[in-house]
Amino acid sequence: MSGPFEPRAATDIAQLIADYPLAWLVSRAFHASPLPLLAETDARGAVVALVGHCALRNAIVADFRADPHGLILFNGPAGYVPTALLSRLDWAPTWNYAVLRFTVEVEFIGDETRDAIEQLVAKMEGGGWSTASLGPRYEKMLDQIIAFRAHVRSVEHSFKLGQDESVEGFGEIVAGHSDRTLAKWMEGQR
Image 1: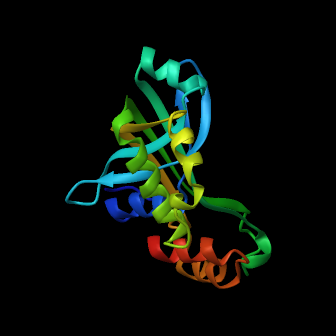
Image 2: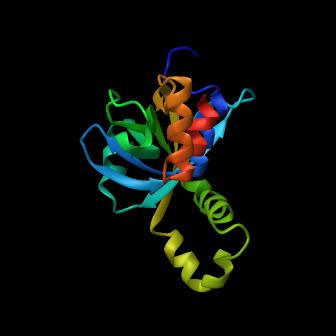
């Protein structure tokens, strides 16, 4: 990967998804749903698919059954960088961010719905809650949900996290920015 706003490694893309799993799934018919997704990666750590689930009544289900092509959009860390953080008077404010855009083909995997939900619950709850606590309600819910695997066909990304700043300016931004998560991501991309 090259260029000023490229992630340092393929694993940075998977990390953004892990840290910010809520994404917009958009069909060619322009229906869109915000859904939490989990990344499937290859041996190098590159994202090859995204797995999620949605209600069968969601308009995107009919859309993707008719045409499996779509987009998935992730927003990672982001924040305004004010002039007050820098000692240079001729420096202009900016916005730092990390975003992903995947072109995908969606495949419905109804027989994996339970597993997709369980994987998401395990990630989000960290063992603190289980679908078993839903009792018989869980089986009724499963009848109205379908899992999908969005196979990645291409990815575009921009990790604009201060890589174009001078060493001194970058240091001032990282040291003084109020969003410490954004500052940590900036440090990771320098």
